[in-house]
Image 1 (cartoon, rainbow, N blue to C red):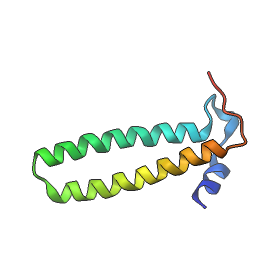
Image 2: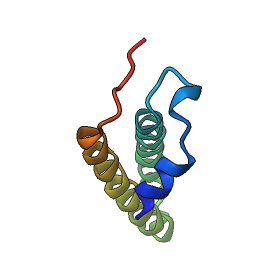
Image 3: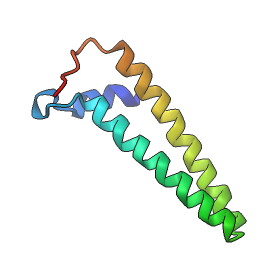
Image 4: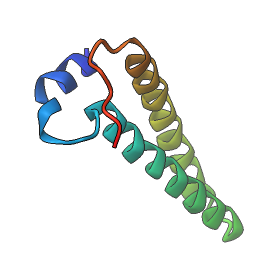
Length: 81
C-alpha cells in the first residue's frame, strides 16, 4: 500500500508537523493550483490540456481522501505548534 511506504519513509521526529499533515497540505496546494490551471486553460479554449488537468486533479483528490482517512485513523499523536 502506498501509505505503508509513506510511513516507512516519513521521519515523525524530524518536524513539528505530522508527516501526513505535511503531505496533505502539499496536496491541497496542488489542488488549488490545478483549479487555477484548469480555469486558465478553459478561458483559452485549450480543451486537450483541460482534459489532462482534470484527470490529474481527480488523482490528487483521491490521494487527498486517502490521506485524510489515514490521518483520522492514525495512532501517532498529531503535534500542534
